[in-house]
Image (cartoon, rainbow, N blue to C red; front, side, top):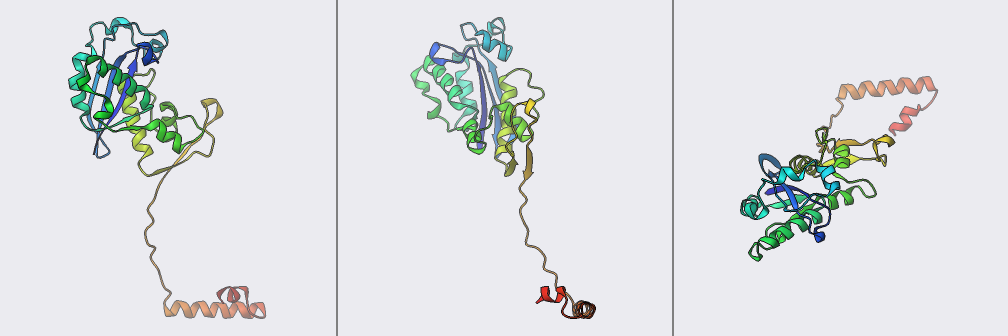
Length: 236
């Protein structure tokens, strides 16, 4: 099974306000293994980046001036994702931006759903950890994924972290959260316990000599107790 973990960065939060993609990043999984193949590109959005998005991503308008436009990379991007399953955190956001870009370059490209199934790890996390924070950073902390290199949001590092988070969430591990999670100031704790498959235990039977020794010991206990000892009653 081939899966693509995908993340995007944008000029702003609202696709309906004409905001555009400025980065696409993909990490490939095959049979639940990170293959090392990835696809990443920055994009010239032909518009300014909102101040909030610039603060989050660290990407400046000037940096994108010589980068390709989506129409120039659409074919190679679609070739990379192929018919793989897409794994996206808050998929509705990324897919809306991707569909908007596809619509701009022509009806023949269709929509993401025409090409790929999409798995939303945010919805998955909300089902598994209801009432808790399920941002990518929160999931990294809960599942023991090292995100210390993530000073700013970046498409490729976020896709790599999400790949690790997805594999941890679906690897048969049991996460005991105990309801302690919150911000760092709350002293959150999480315990990750691997599922251990139980093996049929070996049955060891006492030898005749051992049974005889045991009975003699019970006789001695009965004698010292002046009657039937508690051990004899327990055996009965």
